[in-house]
Length: 65
Image (cartoon, rainbow, N blue to C red; front, top):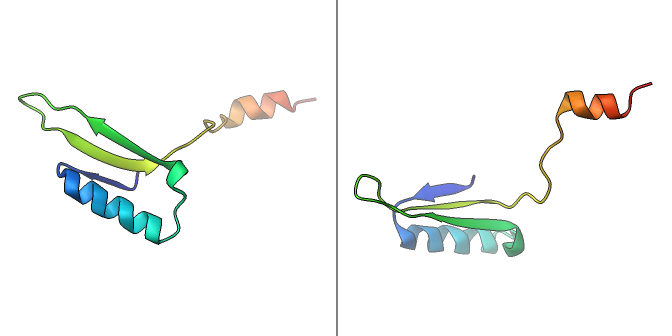
């Protein structure tokens, strides 16, 4: 995760900065966690992951003798 905030304008500012630094915009994930009365709306920037990491035990067994 790059960044999390309650302020939408901060997300736009941070996103602009990431793009200016050369981050691939297609690989940036933007989540809006909708709030309720007890929990405010939260905005989160993170890196999009296309394939989950393999478990070391499972990977090892695939290449076993």
